[in-house]
Amino acid sequence: MSYKNFETQAVRIAESASDQREHSSPIYLSSSFVFDSAEQARQMFADEIPGNIYSRYANPNTSDLIAKVCAAEGTEAGLTTASGMAAMFGSMASLLSQGDHILASRSLFGSTHQLLTRVFPKWGISHTYGDIKDIDRWEELIQPTTKMIFIETPSNPGLEIIDLEYIAALANAHNLLLVVDNCFATPYLQQPAKWGAHLVSHSATKFIDGQGRVLGGLILGQKKYVDEVQFFMRHTGPSLSPFNAWVLAKSMETLAVRMDRHCSNALKIAEYFQESRDIEFVKYPFLPSHPQYHLAKKQMKQGGGIITLTLKGGLERAKRFIDQLQMITVTANLGDSRSIVTHPASTTHSKLTEEERERVGILNGLVRLSVGLEHVDDIIADIERALEKSR
Ligand SMILES: *Cc1c(COP(=O)(O)O)cnc(C)c1O
Image (cartoon, rainbow, N blue to C red; front, side, top):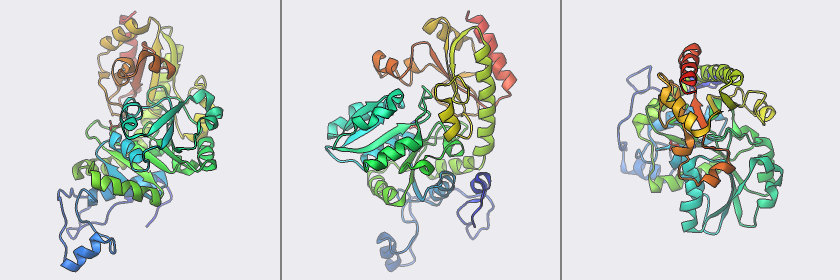
């Protein structure tokens, strides 16, 4: 059975119930699955018939999660990984060989940046960064050995937006694979495959889980590419635990309602910051003051749950502000039901040099706010008090 709307698909698509007729999916904590006969085992190993073999390959809970996220992203196939970084690494390592080159947006998650600058060079895979403001000059950065374009939109933490339609056309014109880290938007707000991305990767740890409980990752896309990634992942082993897959599949059922609230809260808070005399600059994709507001409106359903801001008074003020918050938590995660504040320059992006950070707009005074599901008035009250006390 297929359903027309995102919300219904997310709730109703599920692996069929077992002979116990349960309504909610059970957790299949089983490393392996039993064969009826030696011949059936042979056929399953040979991919002649479908069926679970071993949980490093597939498990009913990971299949359930994949079915839900594929429907949400509008993709043909997918696989799960132990964390978001396993998804980022796997989507690149499985499809690239020694001598290949990646064109990537400079604004990337800290660990993805480490992969490109510290890990892949060991295997002879190089990269070039493109700046988002010069996106019309990315074509000049393509080399004869370029195989892949890897981007994040909106980027963490800079909230830079890349035109998915434009970049997919560029990739196709040069026969390159386009991989998009869709972690910040979630499939509810943005579906890169619909604009032409060949693979979409996720940290499911963030908004997909939505309650700060488990790590997980996903890679979705056309079957021919997912199959290649799957081969690499099966044999290198960064598989998702059935328990985590179960948590994440349950989370998918509430993604739409949660994101609606994350986004409406975030927009109200961004508007509040815009009026505040304590703020030098506030960035939120659906604020008209965002440099790529029209692009965000074109490819995102809403602005997402993350806001960045620079306080008047720079780094010292930012630290005082963070220390004065009473409700909002200081922690390294994002996309939680609880609002979170982070100082990227000294935490998630501390491994970058100051120059690298400046080039992607991670100034020392920048604060990232992941807006949670508390009542918006209580979030604003906490911020207001901390702003006052940090003056
Ligand atoms: C957190 C994050 C990752 C890494 O995900 P983990 O689940 O922590 O491994 C990758 N990309 C982005 C944009 C992220 O925010």
